[in-house]
Structure formats: structure tokens, C-alpha cells
Image 1 (cartoon, rainbow, N blue to C red):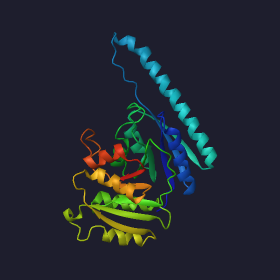
Image 2: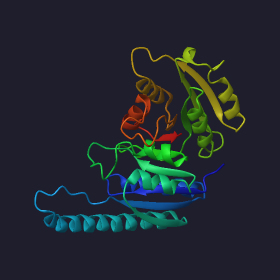
Image 3: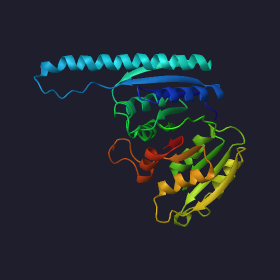
Amino acid sequence: MALHNILVHVADDTHCEQRIVSACELARRNQADITGLYVRPYPVVIPAAPIGGAIPVIEGLSQAFEKACKEGRDRFHAAVSRAGITSDWHEADGDAAENIAIHTRYADLAVVGQWSPDETPEQQPRDLAALVALSAGRPVLMLPYAGDHTLSFERVMLCWDGSREAVRAAHDMLGMLPHGSSVDIVCIDPEDSEDRDPGADIARHLASHGLKVDAHRMSKGDITIADTLLSASADLGSDLIVLGAYGHARMREIAFGGTTRAMLANAPLPLLLSH
């Protein structure tokens, strides 16, 4: 199924401009509509003075959030105008992940940013992509904070272990890839899998959709699964990593498996998450 509706998270992080531009280009190539969403956080103040003294501070924060929202809206509309695509705009207040997940339920794809050590949690929550994927039931495309990514999706790496999450990710991926794209299916330590022939069945299925498919079996050795996958993506020349996200959105601090969290933090190229 092709992409028809794309949601992009608009914020005041340093890399928002590029994220909007990339999402608009993806929408243009797919002849899709795009929706921009800005989420204003609730002002949280721990007053060092009596409660009344915090009121001006809260008002100042609210005004700053409103100003950032307006600037984000202006950037979004400028990018949409340059791309010549149909758009919509939404604003919300509260938790970013919760609000993005709610709006993503009515889109084919959400585009969010990767956490950067240079940003505050309000600008870019650390586990935003996974929290949205776990709650929304829709795929989430996380764009790295470093580099310029064209989102051509000509050489894709699918992380495969035969799980439900991996199956969902593989099928969500199909709606994003142009005909004839190459997909590398990477199985880590496949001898530990219950799949009778890890990667073979999904390779045949993806090939039936007009994709060029290769299956690779790798051992992680003495390094982590995440490091093995990131190394494989570099060796294969991938421009997109597709991963099934593990966890539970309501258990925010312990929600994710180590591989999911490490991939979120360290992926140097776009990462498609599904749950």
C-alpha cells in the first residue's frame, strides 16, 4: 500500500528544518498529503519562592512555547509551498510522544527526529520514535540528527528474526519502497531462531512484490546485536534500516529491549520502526 498521508513532528530542535524538508520531499514523490504537528509542553516550574512567584515564570514559558510553535508553523508552510503538496496543520499541548501517537493513528507514516545530545528533552525526547511506534500502531520513520538524508530507499536493510514485530515492519516497509529497490535481509545468529530457514520465506515474499532481495546470515560474536546490525548496514551500503520495535509504551523507563534503544541512539541513517 502506497503512502497517502504523512505526519511530521515539528519542534524547535536544531534539525527540524531538514526533517520537514525531507518529509515534504517524501510526500511529493508519493503524491501524498502531509500534516505538521507541533506539541507544546506543559510549563513545569519548581518554585524557589512562594507559589505566586512562579506565575510570571509559567506565563513566560507559555509565551516562549507559543512563539516556537508559530515559528515551526511558518517553517512548515514554507517547505510545503516549495514542495507544492497538500498539507494540514495541527497543534497540541502536553506530552510529545502521546500526542504524536494519537495523530499518527490517522496517517500512513510518522516522521520524527532522533534524540541529539545537544537538545533538551523538551526539544527532542530521547525515545520518541519507539514510544510513538509502540502506541500508534503505525510505522515511524526516525531521521538521524546528523547528515542530510534524501530518503530514496534504494538499498534497504531489514532486520529479521521471524517475530511478529519483524513481520509488521517488513510489511510496513512495502508501502515506502519504489519498485525495484534492493532489500538485504539480515539474520543475526539464525541458529537460535525457530524459523526453519531464517530469511528464506520472507525473501520470497518480498521478491514477489518486485523487490531485489538478498538474505544474509551473520554472527554477532563478542559485540551486541545493535552494533552488528549497524556494522552490517555500513558494509551493505544501506540507506534505510527497518526494525521491529519491542516493548510496551506504558512502561516508559523499561519499555525497550537493548537492541531497540541502542539503535535509536546510534543509527546513522533513517530507521523505520514498527510494532
